[in-house]
Length: 99
Image 1: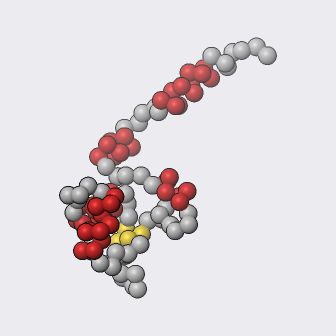
Image 2: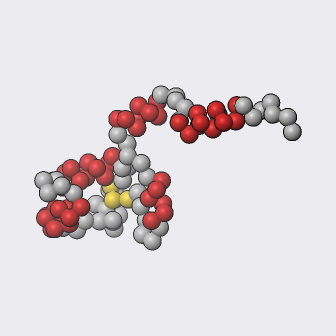
Image 3: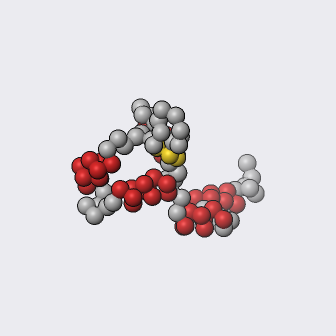
């Protein structure tokens, strides 16, 4: 997507979806945290792109994630998810069950 008029976007669109005090620069930082890429050349210069943010394909948005400090820490620390732990606990006692 591309924002053709930053001032109009900040004054009319952003207050509907973000805090009233939100600034355009904060919005662009959020785009970066969500891994949007800014197009730096060609006819779409200045547009933002994300492989999972595509028109008529809202199901792809579920694959997007925010790159924040907590996510980085979780990705660098090997842990077992609660769902995996529960599944392992449920299957651990079934291995020796006679048929």
